[in-house]
Image 1: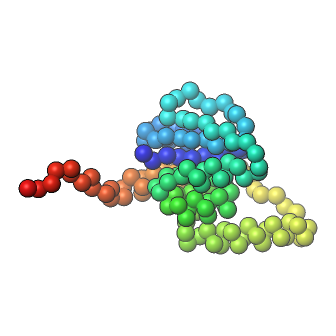
Image 2: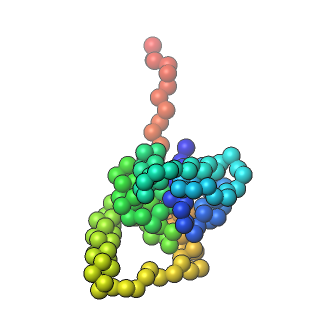
Image 3: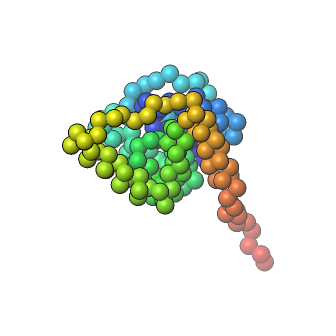
Length: 161
């Protein structure tokens, strides 16, 4: 069953994920470092991980499977999930792909260097309504693309005789 994993600490699009997942009958797993209020529905699960900074990321990578969806703006996590065959969408609607992840990692490293050297002091653009709309569009597109993939036929247990 296709599952949507949400890197839930600070994720601004959880409500949108719930609505879309409900429409398609998908399971949602929120992974966070602390408990949070979630809808009381069988299809929504919360996993609280303790420990080091990347514990939630590690949990997601351990449990994500091919054709699952991960919602996260964390570029290293996106890279790790793509290697497992998952689709990854950032909260602002950015779809990470095998073709784009290398550039995203390089841009992240460059921006970190510029911040450390105090060459750049601007913060990221705020999350706006247009970002939420773009996210919903991309999430629906990714789900549709996964659902349209040809499925492996189930082999019959009967052997022709």
